[in-house]
Amino acid sequence: MFKCRCEDTGSLPAIKEFMSLVEKTASGGILDFTHLQTDPFMEHWNKLCIIEYVEDKADYRFKLWGTELTRLFETDPTNKMMAMVYPDENTKTSGIFIPTRSRKHK
Image (cartoon, rainbow, N blue to C red; front, side, top):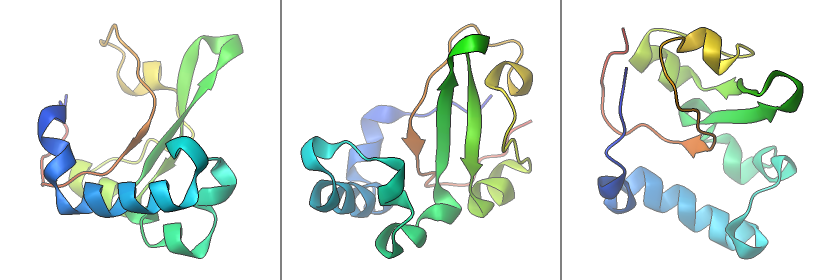
């Protein structure tokens, strides 16, 4: 499974650009889904993964899996549950991610 080296992400240009947009747009740095549907964010859709918690399943659903992610990981889990995509993983996370280098997910 692809693992993020999160300590490196803050210095990456794609992350800096996206976080600057978040800070300019969202009060307290917290985005509402409606923010993501505006023009400034649309150019980032191809690099975004949006995951939502589904309480009755105690799991997460991939709401959006950008086309660049599909190209990099050679899969599109949009609308699939995380447990279905990663059945061997014990931990579940949510968030918005921007990949910055090509790694294949098998």
